[in-house]
Length: 157
Image 1 (cartoon, rainbow, N blue to C red):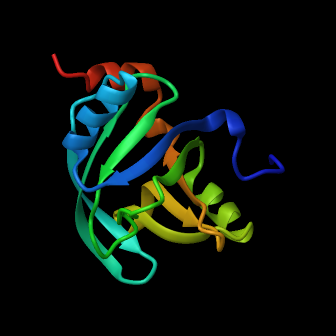
Image 2: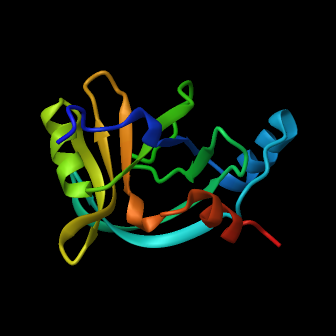
């Protein structure tokens, strides 16, 4: 078993929670020339560390240009809350075993904050938060086995 819960090479995006995904896509295109996937939306069952299970509508988009940015629509009262003076919300890593990686992150001091739930079990992604405020998102690699192909498939035509 690896000595670290994560591998640096698996970092694939920096997430930023914003008040308006589409407006920030336009703004980041203006200032840095970013190109974007379509704005995606999914109603997902999510388990929150302090509030039980809820179905949340997650809206997000990825930059096509590396290093990749994920813009996520704010959902007040959840971990997806925008901060007035802190842009980076999370660092997103792929992992091969969500349950094991999540357990190892918790053991390393990154408390489970939220995760998607399928059939009552954590699945798809999980957010872990360190006491310092650094947030890690882990994503099951089988959900996006080829990032470049995934981004192309979500590019507006």
